[in-house]
Image 1 (cartoon, rainbow, N blue to C red):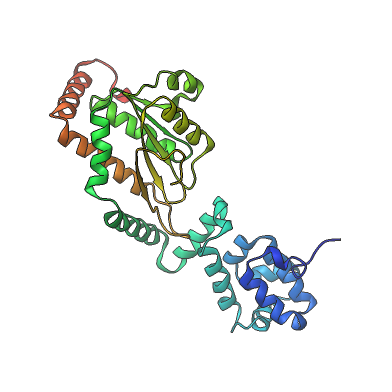
Image 2: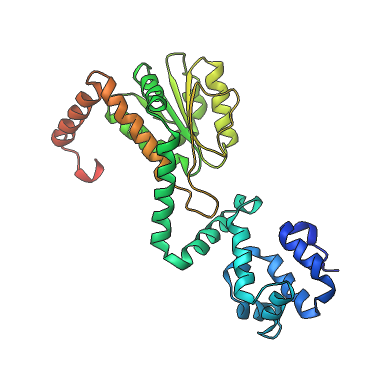
Length: 300
């Protein structure tokens, strides 16, 4: 037998569960059907108006308004705002990418989508100003300056930044291997790690098992490890030699890639400031090669 929303109270957000408990004796059959629809897809419920929810539940369009009032709200818009607030406050739903996207759309409704994204990025960048110091940046850049090779590794969205870091470091004269771009030869690359090398790990939301594996291998081979993570991906064992952990945005906000990219750019810029002209000479040599190589410009 299919369970109703009342039967699933322990599986839904506790605040809403409490509302249902307190008002259970007042709920009608139409209310139960509406709650079933809401609980089956809480993400969609936070986005739809009362008429759409009523239609999906197969009840009168006014039923959603009546349910909201029985639960103590002035009307369905206020109840919907309650559902949206629960979504934006995070929790387990934010392990679901659809929930994260829905929460961002909810936040964007009042002020506009682009403005919402910009506000989120600016707020996240401002937090970096307060949480990351020049000393943190220098620890990374000095490690890169003094190493033989750099191995960069990230999975998921972090793989895009891994590729950019490798590109920029190679152009700056530092032999760099983007492990994320060589997954078919990951073991071969890691087998060459030495104490003279640096492994730069990137982990957003949570570090993948492979990132943990690479960290352990680096520790076992004596290579220095740098880690640029967000707050959820910060925990690694053994701990990296140097780590910068940053917030990429609160729950319901854009989970910024600009923030870790900005930190990485600061590290590479600081590296150029302390390596006695190595980066500048390499960039000049690369520019000259690109101009005279005869390779199609589309490839460069």
